[in-house]
Length: 160
Image 1 (tube, rainbow, N blue to C red):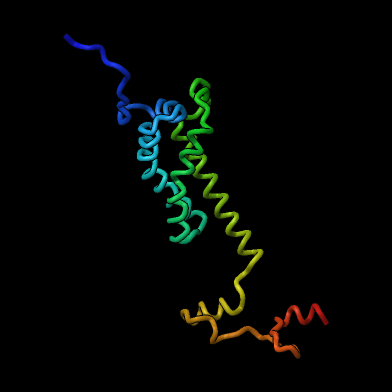
Image 2 (tube, rainbow, N blue to C red; image 1 turned 90 degrees about the vertical axis):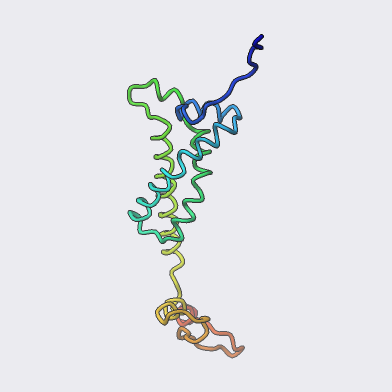
């Protein structure tokens, strides 16, 4: 005699992203892992294109690729399945692409703001042009005070 099957088996490889999103929200680790696996390579390609667009370094690209997992989980929690019913609604894949695009843009803009706010010092620029070193060989113009502390010239002008 055949016994009735208890529970069910998830065939994640043949399920749509939207079904997997709903299951992942309910705590299915198999569904979440399948979404992460499916979208990791695709989003890595998108990040490569976005890094070229924003002129980001290979190190930045590696950092951003590591964030794909967190962004996918963020997209799972934020995706509105009702979007599928709307005529102009978007799929989960499109939504995830928008999340990744926005996060990379935020990263690039924050990096540019930091560069403007904290430009590289003359010391770092000079050492970088010389090909490395410990940073002690070349110094920016400074004048010593009576206590022996070095104060940058631009600050001395403001203090005078």
